[in-house]
Each structure stands twice: as structure tokens, then as C-alpha cells.
Length: 430
Image (cartoon, rainbow, N blue to C red; front, side, top):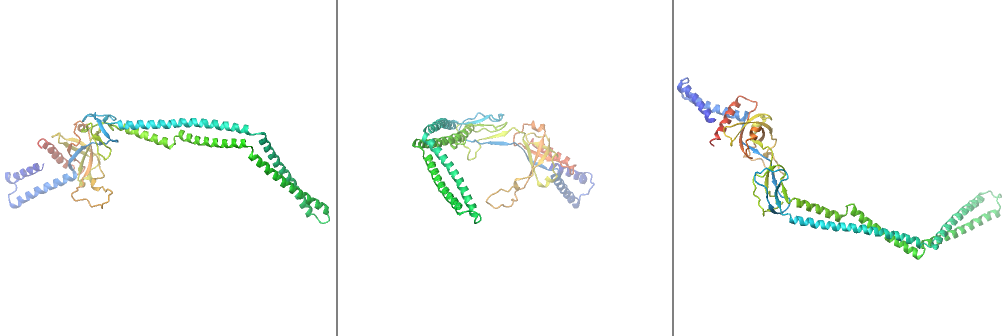
């Protein structure tokens, strides 16, 4: 396009200076004409680059999933084919499942052992309950007439203590009343009689209390068979409580051993499922270099396959920062692809990305340095396109030249369109 402008300007100068001789040929006019040509080129270049910018690094990008196995093993089958459409869940490749199947079988057997222990605890619980019940029956049989009489004597002694205490309290209250009475109103004989009765009842209370203690001790000791039956009941009840706690832990699923085995079994089953690597979504594999016999490892991170998601590719081009302030979503733009010379396609600005790599700060142990001068800081712009571009079957990464037509100095957009079409025609040759 520069050559066209220079040629047009040269023809114009030839007509003015040589053909029609409107302008005389002098050193001043020739220098002015040359300088004017440079000025016109500079103004056009700056105006076009600012108001109707163009980018020659436009590309079609597609989301790619890196297929990394979750388990380690030898690849035994790769049924996928290059560029063949796949559905979500289709098998990409298989890893030898035998080590993981062996682990699952081992944990299943271990879990069955734990379940046998649960059945044994049930049987032990039933036996413990029956033994405790039998011991309580033996206790009733072992309780003899002597034991019953001892209990009755203890109850009678307790009642006697209570009765004597009541009479003692009454006698002491009467003695206190007589001692407080006025002198001469109570005879010495009555006062002595009250003191004698209070002392007699105190002695009787001591004797009743002593008899009560003897009866209680006799009741506690009981016979030898009764004491043996009681100890047997205590032992059986303690055993029953211990078995019940173990059974409750097993049945509630909080037993550490059972829960550990179940967790290990779930992990082993998950590992076994991961030996079959499936497509994460609809898409295709662009290059298939994996072969049976290769080793698949989750770490170090090394993808075995690249999976392209079946989504419309994203058209992105980068522009200089001086032009970004005039670019708005919805602006008209045109694109030309190297695969289709001589054709232009309508596109629109979808959005201007708000972050670029030159502005990224990563946490590290090094001091952050200034951005090098070699970094230009171009800003990516995302474009949306119609079916005329979608139907071209362009490969991922196809290069394009894209021009954006802003709202400023709209007359220059005609010149930009001409330049873009000339760029498209150049693709026939270059």
C-alpha cells in the first residue's frame, strides 16, 4: 500500500511538474514536493495506526486439556484416533489394572474379617446377657431365711432408735421447762425425777443405736453364698457393659479399624477406576503419540495427551496500548486469513482484556525488577465472528490480520480497508 501511495503521489507530481508544467521545476519546488510526500506518508501512517489500528498476529485459540493420569502404571491400550470426534466419557487409554484390582480384593477380604468380628460380638453379647440373667436368679435363690430375718431385725432396730430418740427429746424438753420454772413452784423431788428420766433415756438411746449398727453389719455381711452371688453378678455386668460398648462402636460405624479399612477400600476402588482414562468433555485429540507399553505416572507432571475441547475457537489479536482507549466492544472489524487469500471477513470486538503478562507480579524469593524495554506490552483483544468464519474449518492457531474501525476520523477507514485487502491479495504470492 505504501508503494501505491508513493506511486500515486509520484504520478501527481509528474503531471504538475512535467506534463502540464503548472509548477516550475526549481530546487525549492522539488524539495517541497519531496518533503510534502514524506509528511503525507507520516500523517497517514500515524492516523491509521491510531484511529483504525491493524494487528497481524491474530490467531484462533482453543481451550486444551492436558491429560495427566491419576495413577501409575503401564499403558495397555490406546483406542483413540487422531482428530476423531469424541464424546465426554469415551476411553482415551487404559492402564494395567491388575495391581489395583489385587488391592481392592485384599481390602474386601479384610473388611469381611471385620464383619465376622461384628457377628462374633453379637453372639458374645447374647451370651453375656443370658449369664447375667442367670446370676440374678441365683441371687434370689441364695437369699436365705437368715438374710431376710437380718433385714427385718435391722429395720426393727432402726425403728426402735427413732422411738427412743423421740422420748429422749420429750424428757429433755420437760427437764428444761422445770429448771426454768420459778423457785418454790417446783419441788426438788419433781426436778430429780425429771433428771433421772432424761439420763435413763440417754442410756437407752445409746443401747438402741448400738443394736442398730450390729443389725446393719449383719445385714451387709450376709451369708457366704449370697456374697458370692453378688460378686458374680458384678463381674458379669461389667463384662456385658464392655461387650455392649464394642458392639455399639461397630454398629455405629465409628470403629477406627472398620472405618480405616472402608476408607482404604474406597481409595483402592477409585484408583482402579482411574486406570481407564476418559475424555473430560466433547472434543478430539489433535496428536496421538501414546503407545501401549509406555509408563504413565502422575508425578512429575507430564501430560500424555492433549485434548482439544469442542468449542468455537477464540479469535484474539494484540494491539499497541496507544490504540486501546478508542477500542470499544461492538466495534466493526475485518479479518483476513492466510489460508483464504483475496477474502475478507466481518468480525466485531467482543472485549478488551484488562490484564497482560507484562503487568504480572509473581511471589518469589527474588526482588521484582522493572519491565525490560524489549517488552512492548501489547494488549489482547477478543473478537466474535459469524458462521462465514466458523464454516472455514480453519486449524487451531491459524494466523489472521485484523483491522478495527473506530468512530474517529471515519473517512480514513476506507484507506485501511484498501490496505487490508491488498494484504489479503499478497497472500496469493507470499
